[in-house]
Image 1 (cartoon, rainbow, N blue to C red):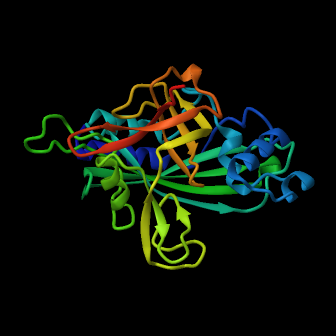
Image 2: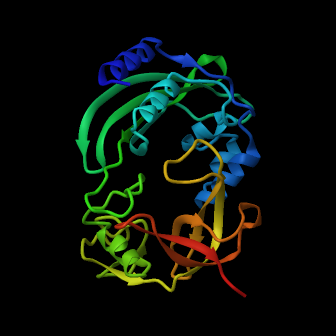
Length: 297
């Protein structure tokens, strides 16, 4: 598909305006709120006491099974894939909350495709920025929350002289995160540490969350942990990966949690609390990803 055809398709989808989806499969309910609060470590009792859902759960209530229903986003994404822009990375997610969702009401999503910008040269390769908005409506057709979501769909670059093509899902490496990826190449799981108060933090950032110091170093973790939470990803397809695969939150004895793939065993054998150890997998000639495998007895 040519650049002109991509723009024409994006314009048609934007002209559709807001397209209503199916109501959520389940009403807002206390068990799911309880699970969310436990996973996020949120101990605020107000939600369950007052029958309200945390605002950030808006998308949870309308998640559908794969391939159920269509939205104005589907055709542009498929067209970009067909044109070779198979890499994808989220770049913006901005949420606005109008009110709390209440236990018992059923939310309905409405999606509006807003923009396709490109082609643009980026650090990942040439690509297009696709933007859409989702509004969740509650009972009485009252908006509960809105989300602007933007992704970069890019064409993975073929590096000169490389033995294999670059892995399509390249991480964003900057001055705050470079130490982590350099550590992975060296077989070290590095956790950002405040040089002033000693607090460990992951993911990395420019300031210590305890004392606000910008003097940062890192600690090399033991590489052992336990599985705190996980999901098995079946759909949508992910460039460079075969589904299903497991994405886990691993709790380290050093006191932080990290996200990574759990490999080395079938997804059906993965369970919360299992002992894991880090393994380093080269994804291309430059990128090494820390992954997690079951700890041998």
